[in-house]
Structures are given as C-alpha cells and as structure tokens.
Length: 172
Image 1: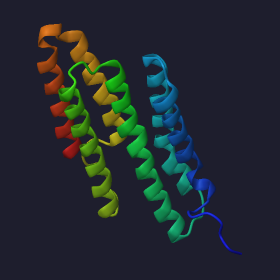
Image 2 (image 1 turned 120 degrees about the vertical axis):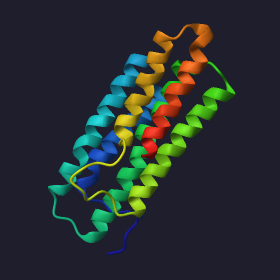
Image 3 (image 1 turned 45 degrees about the vertical axis):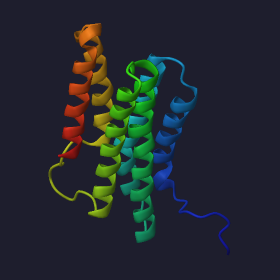
Image 4 (image 1 turned 90 degrees about the vertical axis):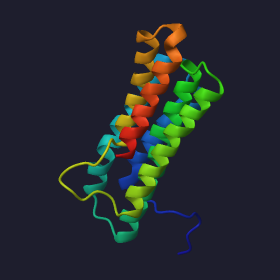
C-alpha cells in the first residue's frame, strides 16, 4: 500500500500532538495572560507524560526516532515560541531590547534541543541543565518577578539580569 502522507502515524505521539495543539491555540488565540499561562501549564503536563505514554507502546526504530524528533519540534513551539509570545504580549516594554532577550531565549532553547537530539538524548541517571519545559516557566516567572520587584525606572536592569541568568542555566 502506498503512503499518502509523510511521517509516522502511531498512537505513541498523540499526547505530543495534543500539547503542541494546545500551545498553538495559545499562540494564535489567547487574549489573556491567565488563559495563556493555563494553556502553557497544560502543554507542560502533556510534555511531562508523553515519554511515559510513548514508552508504553511497542515501537520499531523508525517510530522511536520519529517520536524523539517530533517531541523536540513540539517543545520548540510549546516552550520556546509560546513563552516568547506571552512575554512579548504582556511584559515586553523595551522594543529592540525585548526582542533581543526573546532571541537569546529562543536560541538557547533551539541549541539545547538540537544538542540532545544530536548526542542521542540523555541516558543518565541525572538530568543536565534546565529542561526547556521548566525553562519556559522560569522565563515568565523571572520576568514577572522583575516586573513586581523593580521600579519602572530600574525595570530594564532587573529584566535583563533575569533573562541573562536564565540563558546561562539553559546552556549548562
């Protein structure tokens, strides 16, 4: 039988697709900070359990490799693009500087995901660095904290410090 579409269609990636769909909905349609954060948390829950769900299926090597790649691409959208969209929509006040902070965060996310895809993932008893799922929450938490704790005049220095600290932790 000839395949009509490219890709691997296996139920082991359905939770990954659900998390990605939730994030895409948030990127394009969310109009409030609370709803955006709720969608980000739901995407995080999907990401937390998608590996366990995938491992519960009997899969061949192609299905496993496809699952790893689709999970990373989904993570890029869910925990890279979506948090940056939330940041730019609700917290960014400095034009080019806010854009550069967003680019630095996204480059860190892409680099981390590509590194672990190229190196075959983490097969250790411990986790290296900060996972992008948690980094997205930290990214927004640090920005919100800077907004609360630093006065308007000093807001830039607090925000920049928090974002650089996050980028450092992503790179570990």
